Length: 386
Length: 82
Image (cartoon, rainbow over all chains, first blue to last red; front, top):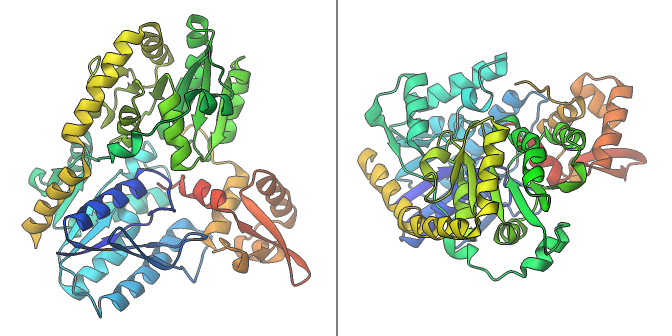
């Protein structure tokens, strides 16, 4: 099958989970002998065309700009569509797979041009990300999301909670939406790491406990609730140190909260780190906290589990489906610092239980979250609409 | 959302959206002001902050200071929309 993938994020243009999802799925589909063409946006240092493990990647330069984000998004879709048109002179695509609303305009136009079906993966919704629709741009994005779900022949979401959100908000028939979870390449996480040296690099001593948080620094990730939990955690575990990995517009505010907590010297913000550093940190941490208030899937939970770190996650959205409470991790109440502190204490106070949780988690990942399995399920959706 | 997007971040987003994402597409303060309809003093103040934070790279081109986003600056902008 010749598959055309449209995504605004693809490595090295990595922001959230979409880039990793598209990369994992594209590689797995190519590994199953399908022809995969990924159309995405450019990034400094990345070539405009390359082939990675059988996946053909086309990076498009947006030649025109506009200060308004929506206008810019429509402009880059124009340039994506132009590149698609060019490549389609040589390649007769069988299916178009669009990821999120951002590339939907190009995907929908292309659908009518090549008369092929569109499969849409919705990774999150505007109403969920922004916790409501608060301005004209939000309403427009919400409208484009609805339009994309209307034009798609089938929709893929990564969790049951996301399916409920999408069907409820856009009044979609249940059988149009298929749940196919995210996956990870768990072998990438079986690396030997000099734990002490990694911890030292991030200011954590051999007798201290490393509490790790990885995610974009935006409201939906709920990092402020972890910072509010720090005094309670430190009271129970004075040896705890906190490393927060990620970028986002809320960073300045979170740094201020950390300083105001009275434990600022125990909390370190690293900014964006490359995958290899994140993996090393995950393999060296004592507990990974995911304090999100909105999380359609939460791939970071799988990454933590694969790296063998015990996970404490909010009981929201996809996280509540990925983490089985007290069997593969600990679920804490969302927006509740005391509950987060309780979860961290449960892990740090009982290393045997923590080891049992991580053993169960690794087993579960291998059974349910392999890219090959997810690629086969995605192919079934392609075949249904072809 | 309970938090407002900081002013310097709003400028960073605009720089990204108008295409100042690589050296050869760097823009001068005057060009940025024209594109964004922002005051020169506002742009200069926030550009300085963004340079200090490592999100914007200043260069000298055609005898004037010009600015473009670093890879970390691009990632920072994309966190708003992803």
